[in-house]
Length: 266
Image (cartoon, rainbow, N blue to C red; front, side, top):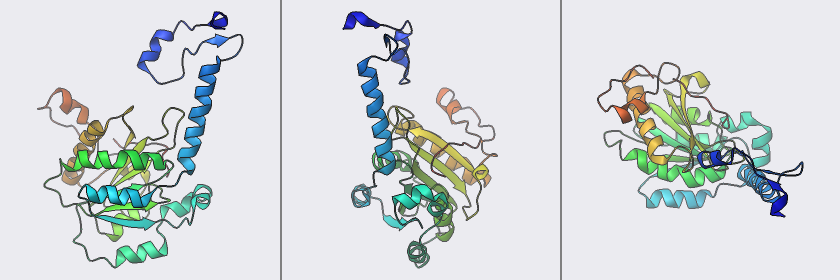
């Protein structure tokens, strides 16, 4: 059967990308192997959206790594409501709002929130390695407990940060899965979080996964943005990400910092 397969002249480029290029042809169709691989990737993307986050395992992993944790839930009672009603995923349930409001914590400089978003796989696989990589750079910061949020959208972090009186909130959330990235994590950084904060007031780091932006590289970017957000008292369009310049020129002076945007669960 291999005699009937026509190879694509771009085949050598496949070593540089996971994109579906140079798959070859069998008559007017794809060869069987790439077609089956596509169907598998499609199934994995669907599973990522519907698979529930195992919060008990995540809490245990975080606590074993030395993090204090809190558990909250959005106003979406289940996955079906979460997918049909994005607005419910942007606000806390009454029970979670009351629980956070009763805490007597010193206002943290930064609070990290892990949300399942549109890929629980991402939250389960990428959030802890990312947290470990970035918190080693934040020795002089007062961080609050790590909040694990179920049925979460990006804006849920605003209400959490506001209730905890955090100076900055970092939302680590599963991004909309692609056909080659069912476990990609997005990072959203917001200064002075409060209900009603717009996306223009956030910075975004996306595609955090071993095959995309590594945990170490993402931690480098996040540390840079956190440091300058605290110094300037802002995030969003006024905060430019010049962190890559530091990798090439350690003495380079940062300019000012650019809001990121992505199609994560907002």
